[in-house]
Image (cartoon, rainbow, N blue to C red):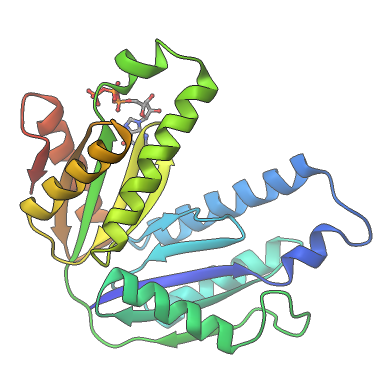
Length: 244
Ligand SMILES: Nc1nc2c(ncn2[C@@H]2O[C@H](COP(=O)(O)OP(=O)(O)OP(=O)(O)O)[C@@H](O)[C@H]2O)c(=O)[nH]1
């Protein structure tokens, strides 16, 4: 089982244009602050948090119970001009867990329903290890950042990332862009061959070479840290796929 949490801003679409459209930079600042707050709050519980679409934030929260979710939610809702609802559930795979939290929150009402305010729904039982892969583009700085223009670089990283996210999704894993040339995936227990296959598919489709470090542990934060160390091993002469 793997535990996911979906954090969704309540009735955000209408709020962004009420009483009239709000400045985009103010909305961006709010979204960035909310994401930073959620990272700090859930990070303190050894979870990992991805900005997803900013109005919907996805976290993997193995070991974080309903009460801890409630206190994070209460603090956010006391301090922001918008409220958030949350759903937390265990699933058979990261893909399944994200599906379950999405259904739970949808059952509470629409994302644009003025009556759906600060809900917290939870369907959790046991925990198990979680696998995290940290992907990185081979020599992104030398090949792209120092060679082509910034927007071309963004397109290339985005294209490779989309191919990666789709390949991993087919394997019941969910993957997110985290900055620079980095993507992090939360996966069911895949093996080295699975990752090698995914890297091969991305390269074939986009001509971009990836490498990955993979960790597996009780908490997403620990698994993520293992993955970073494995990625360092790959950077320092290891293979394109390095496991904990
Ligand atoms: N979010 C996040 N960003 C990172 C991380 N490591 C590197 N970056 C970003 O990715 C950019 C590229 O750094 P690297 O991936 O280390 O460099 P590279 O040129 O791809 O070189 P190699 O990794 O050795 O192939 C950096 O400028 C950062 O913006 C990380 O662990 N997390």
